[in-house]
Length: 319
Length: 321
Image (tube, rainbow over all chains, first blue to last red; front, side, top):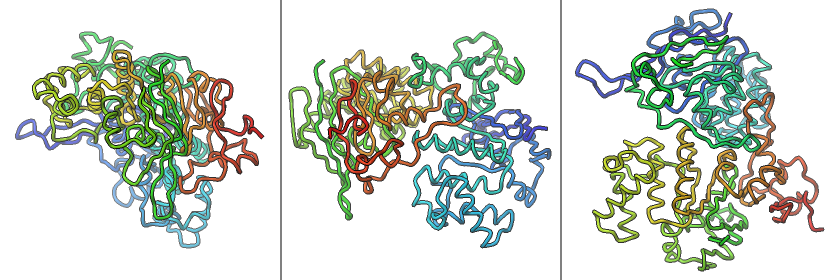
């Protein structure tokens, strides 16, 4: 049984602009997404800004409620949970945010901040809390002596370690990490990626790893999904996606990565143009205005999301 | 090759009540006409301050000193505000990282480019507007004539960055400094901007100084590379030499940290973090993070020395003792 099953998940946001006096304009941020995640595995989600990847993470955590679709998590209907039931199950699904500065309370000592979930979920007392805090700090590679400090006394990388400590404190089954390293320097980024992998291996957590950096996503993920204007356009085992991409958008994204020193030199190309506004997505295949291979049917018919090889799904007429 | 600009022994310090810590500590560099120099390093290593020092644009509270700044046949040890004005825009221009905050939100885009022509070249309003549209066309803004009448919020991030490049190049400078020009942009737009910079460099015979934390990006653009750490250049030389066979442990560490496509397991990582400028370690600033550090490294800051066709500041390559 899969850890997480997502079916036809959809979220529209109304804009203040109106189409007519009856109807507001809307952005479909997440458009009928379906996927599974197995225990202990990582699904990477990549895409350009505005593609809906952050909304997807928020929907899974129910920080934003979907308009339609279903989510099963740990075998139960995750969207049916309400109030206290939802709160008590939240311990099983936790999130790591992009900006560790903004996600830690500046007036709370870090020892308290990282053990707050344990107080909420397990009613931990003061003594237990201190013990847990020390253990958590060690797990994320911070000195136990820093427990009584405040967030501003830590560097960006250390703050991200604190954010991770808090997220894994309840031993969640699923961790949603939204751009956890995009504000960090390369040397620190490597430390945090290694830490996330280590913690995942120790606890056997599943992970949704959302990022715009294709190299980082490949390094972290078993499966990678490419998102464009609210939809998945391709999903495959990491190796297959990077070595034999089927969707023209995936190919274009991959060609835009500058080759790292030591890799075969080539010109970074990338797709032409920029993504259209999600409030007025093109008809047919959403990628057709930028697609070098488009055919007449791409302009009118939306391609189906279909499996072209085991575990390799694409939404493209030509794949 | 002709030397366009040379800078000797630049120091930048910040005035604070606790003393005047130095953020740039003795940087010397040389730009040859027509080349692209990549300046890389992590945040806080002093690369942006070095760039701003070439334009006399340091933020308030920061002071720069240098033994000498040379631009073609002119030379200063302490440039005056007039000296800087004669360089800025006409000879040296800069493009910053933030395409979202560098443009005036209540001024038409075309007017912001035209302003440069009016102020620097004394053009009349209409001529300046025409030149502005021409410039926007050159940086690849589609339908430039009508786009010029729009405001920055109607432009995407990539188009705004193109506009900033148009502004920077309006006076046909010899040197363009691009400080993290694509950091705020998507990887797809980044590729477009890099292509544009390459084309403009060729068409206008520019010399380019590209500042970035992204080694992959710099590797694609640069002829020579300078790696900075804690306010100093620790390794500098031809791109192939430095990246193909890095000598400084920091350069090696940076390269090893990059996730490679197809790689598995753990990333090699540099432990620790960049020191704060007010608490620099004694000796070599990198030694607390360096796996090869020995006694001398804790005592004395190494100087840049010629090692196998590039310059390296590291005691591993002979201390001269």
